[in-house]
Length: 313
Ligand SMILES: Nc1ncnc2c1ncn2[C@@H]1O[C@H](COP(=O)(O)OP(=O)(O)O)[C@@H](O)[C@H]1O
Ligand SMILES: [Mg+2]
Image (cartoon, rainbow, N blue to C red):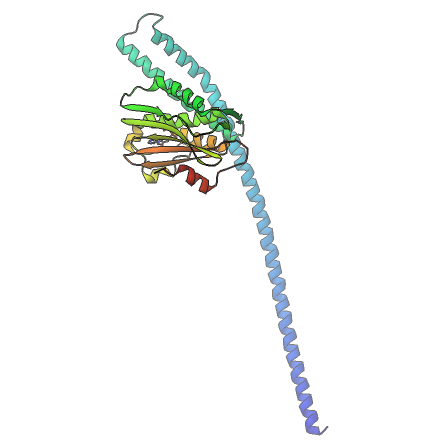
């Protein structure tokens, strides 16, 4: 090896060594960075864990509040029933005129007391039912029954309430609907809510109740009216608690705004769902889509709901 060669090799070695030192320094720097990143991550993790704990606390609080609300509602509704029952029976006695005749004016006033007490009773019953559902204290008692019997019972129930001669309440004979295995009392309650709304908001024409077997496994009930209808922007929120459409005509008939919310919960308890189609000024159709055979934990898919509620034409 010449002196020149040796120098080149030395130079090369020095260069490599410098490069190595540089790389080592860089490596150390990177390690330090990783270490600090790790620390940051650990801190973030602690933060996330703390947040989770807080969320858990909040969720527990919310559950407690909701439980309290349900207990309060059911307690209050229970307490309301007794005095309301007293008011209703006393107004009945007064209207029967057993303790002497009433003047026309007195009779009008007592009738007003009576209808207010009826309304309040309905509201209290709805509240109690909602509270029971929320507390999971409503059970489903399914049984086989014929649609014809259900419709006949509903017809009988509404007959005394049909005071407006310009509106007909029509029950279509269920022809192609098979026997159904579900809780007929809950189903009847849903339909009663739909029908009483339809009668309340229809001044002329008809309220038509029918059942169709459009989707295998599901029966669709519809209550169609020729009433005032509901604007599209109000349709979305209809089934929420205490929602009433804030239009001038609707405002004249103040109810509780609980009937549809209750109907929705009841339909869901039966494994089904509810839906509405309406045209302002033309009328509304409310649907309940219920499984033919009740089995817990079965919900219709969006496609099944769509199929079950689409109009036949
Ligand atoms: N068939 C209908 N036609 C027009 N509006 C309706 C009909 N059914 C329900 N609505 C509207 O939906 C609102 C909520 O109904 P609901 O929950 O039964 O409460 P409520 O009958 O106590 O007012 C009603 O106040 C009314 O504005
Ligand atoms: Mg109602």
